[in-house]
Every structure is written in structure tokens, then in C-alpha cells.
Length: 299
Image (cartoon, rainbow, N blue to C red):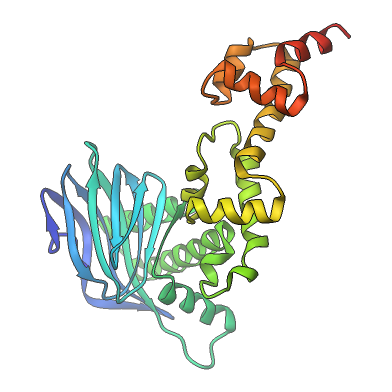
């Protein structure tokens, strides 16, 4: 898919776009690689993906539709779309959308390793997922595109190396984000333990900034209702209750440090108001945060 061909509105496509002849690097067949900038209101119109595609969102926001299913993406997101699915991108907001796209197939034989066959299966059966980059994909896609700009001796060898690094590391990040992405046919009874573990890890790492369950769902590529249900079933408390506990844990450390006033702690932990912070603290600790501070500072 060459964005210049399928675009509406102002679109600037840089580097190779769709290749006249696909490049073969071992088990990877590369169809397209490039960078695209779309203005406000721009759109990549509906088209069928002729190959698997990875997109990295460098800046801006967009809505991606795959076979009618809607996903919102923003800076730092990676989107995977398997070949054969109907694909459309619409720019959101007033900021330009800039993204790098990478189209490919993985070709395996009966003699290939199970790991390689799993990699091929992941990309051909994922359909459409969004998850956060950990910095690796951005770095190597940039190197990849820069190599295209300054093509010189041994460029083909470098293309092959970067293609493998991007595909394998994207797969690893997806797998670390959620086992469910790798095994989409698992039944509900087989999924929750791994998923709940990922939810807990995410909350533990981001409790200070979380304000909505939908934020967690979006970053883990599930619906809010789904993660709310399986979390409660497995943990015996709601996600909101667990978030509150982690925020109060963080507030206790801040109170002990004595560096912030109570209303500043409430703001720092993203409570709607001091009243909300006070209510949650009393519910979990049995006393108000002010009384707690008095008690620990008088000892």
C-alpha cells in the first residue's frame, strides 16, 4: 500500500514507498518501507492490505479502521495489520500525523524452526492490534528509513538486518504486552491469569498517573468491560479499588517525606479533588491523611 496512491487530503510520502520489485531477505519479503506525513483531515482510503504491515506513529493522532473495527493511535504506538484485511486511516485533531510504515510477508517452509513458524503465524493471524513501543522499534525504523535516504554500498545487507530486528522485536514487545495477542483463539478460561498479571504490572508501574480504567484497557489492547470483569473475578476486588490502594500506598510515602501539602499530594496522584483523596484514604487506612501525618510526625 503506497499512501500517495490511496490518500485524500494533503499527504507527503517520503523514501521508497511501494517497491517495484519486492526485496527478499531470507524468510522476509519486503514490499514497502517509508515515512508518511498527513495534514489535518487527511485520510488513507479503504484498501485491502496486500501484505502484513507495521506502522509506528511518530507524532499526531489517528483513527485506524480494519474491517470496520476502530482503533485510536497516537505518538509512540505501534499498529500491526495482517494482510488481506480492509484498512483505512483518518487523521484526528489539528496536528499532522507522521508515521513510518513497513510492509512485508514472512515465508516459511516445513523445515523451518517452530520459532520462525510462530513468528509467521503471529503476523498473518493478528489482524489488527495497537500497543506501545519500548523505544526499540522507533530507533531501528529510523535507522532503516535513514539508510533508504542515503542508499550506498551494502545497503541491501543492512535492509535485511534491520527488517529482522524490527519484526522480531515488534513480536517480542507484543508478546510481553499481552499473551492474548499471540494466541487469539484461546478461550476465556485459558486467558485471565496472564492478562490479570499484565493488568497488575501496568497499574503498579503507572498508578500515580492513571485516572480511568479505559486508559489501562487501551494500553493493553482490551475492552474496559473485559478487563474489569476478569480482574474482579480473579482478584476479589475491582480495578478501581486496586488503583486506589496503589495511589494511597504512594500517598503514604509522600506524607512521610513531608515535602508536599495534602492538596498537592491529591493533585500529584490525579485525584479529582482533595475531598476524593481524603475519602479514599480514610476508606483504606481508617483515618484521614491529615491525622495519619500528625501521628507519624509526632512519633
